[in-house]
Image (cartoon, rainbow, N blue to C red; front, side):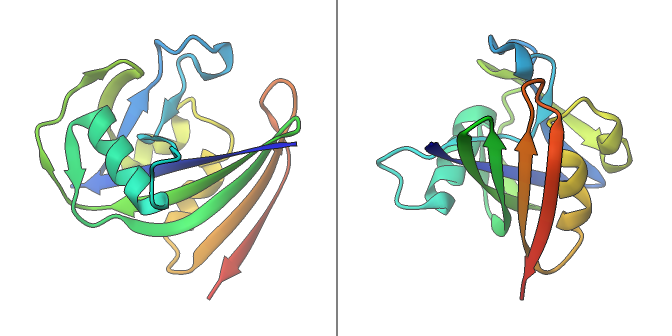
Length: 156
């Protein structure tokens, strides 16, 4: 079983959250899916926080000023295990680059987030981000990328 490490950050300002429409991604299961900016942990990263700062800047042009670790997703995609560190933030600096090699960045009203086409785990993440406890979300995906089972644990 292979394990991969990732990060995502939900940057929210003025009742909106920055999301990436991954319409140009070659993998069919991610085409036209919205996702928070983030990416794969590289061997040179000295942890999840360094990774999200690097990836967020790379994908958005913005520097996060207050990234806060909120929890982890442990996802089983048919034997490929992905650990995803979930961050939230409310402030950044820099100039937003709307287009990026992975898609288009859009500010989405928080009330519209549940209606976006996203990874199945996002519908569980948004309510968890309202909690003050750190969460651990376990999800198992089927071949069609639908969630077969999930569970949530809170820490603290």
